[in-house]
Amino acid sequence: MSESSWVEEYLRATENEIAVDAHLYSIGGGNAGAFGHLPRPARWRGMSAKLRPVLRMVGTVSRVLWGVGAARAYLNYDARRLERYRQSCAPAPQRLTSECRELAVAFSSRAADVLHIPALSDEPKQWLTFPWAPIHPLPPGQAQVDAFSLLTAEDIELARKLAIRASAELRRRPPTRLWALQSYTAVRWFAARIALAKFTECRLLIAEHYDRWAMLADAVARSGRCNALTLVQHGALAGLSANGEAPSGRLHFPLPHRLTSVSRLSVYDAISQSVFLSDVLTPECVARGIDVRTFKPTIELTRMNTTGRASLLIVGHTLCEPLHIALMHQLSRGGVDVEVFYKPHPTAAPGNQVARQPWQVIHERSVFPAVDLVVAYPSTLVTEYANVGVPAVVHALDATPDMAAALGSEIQARLTEKVAATSVG
Image (tube, rainbow, N blue to C red):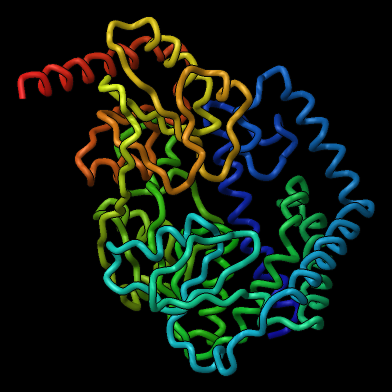
């Protein structure tokens, strides 16, 4: 493929990433402009409203600097850093790219957790990993290779050149101009694209839905370098709803670009299947026929409550921190003696106030405390805990602190019932 085609692939992938970020900023009546169109909204949305003018200024100034040399300087730096990392990699097995028939691509640590759970009917044997997404040790019989062990110094140089070109194009186009800072991942994206282009006759397995990395895998499959693409669901799509309504079978915001090359889909349930078929995959992709399979996401619980009290897990998100802190205050004054655990979102660091609350924070990604009740926004953990018999109280992603009293009353009632039932038993 021509370099221009690869740049267009990147721009399409980034437009999807922008759509996701714009939606996350819009939850609760916000907008991206108030945060300077900074990437990774989950990191910024939980900050105090007093700091938002500062964030807006930081985003605006950064965008100006990005356009007058900072982008090129940063992308050059990132390329040098990745070249040093490439030189440290052990050589990839010979003939891997020509003989591999199924490849799990771990674009993120969360994806790696999903792709090797026992609930999947056929676990992959070969993994492609990246330095920015470390994964847990693999089960016996499975192998992993670092994507950068497949690359040459010339490949890194090509990724650098393409990244600089794509970044300039992102700044030039009116629809994406305000989101120019999104190109901070461009060298990594092109390096991954070049690595995957080396495989032939290989089915790809991914656990990304429609972001820049999903679009990358879809582009590789569409180019004919790999002959099939399997997409495995990794999270509750209803979690992107702002109002907490029951899942409708539709995505809550439009995607600029849908996936075209998915041939197999592993989903939680019929509602999730409907979302993918209606709003994530193109009609042409669906018309060719999709092999749809269902699985139950599973977790292994760790017993951490040694006090004998009722126990509660709050599933954290930066958007929900004000509510959760108010809820903790409400529970502290309530009539039920409860031990509270708090599990932050795996990809967004919690705010400083989280560490000051009288709950136990669970930082380990693979640790899930055994509790009597879960409190969460529409999260994957609601489904995962339900599959092991733990109920949940679900609130909207944009629920405000003034809802803490009603939520606290419901939680205390549910825990009181649980304690009473346990005593009778």
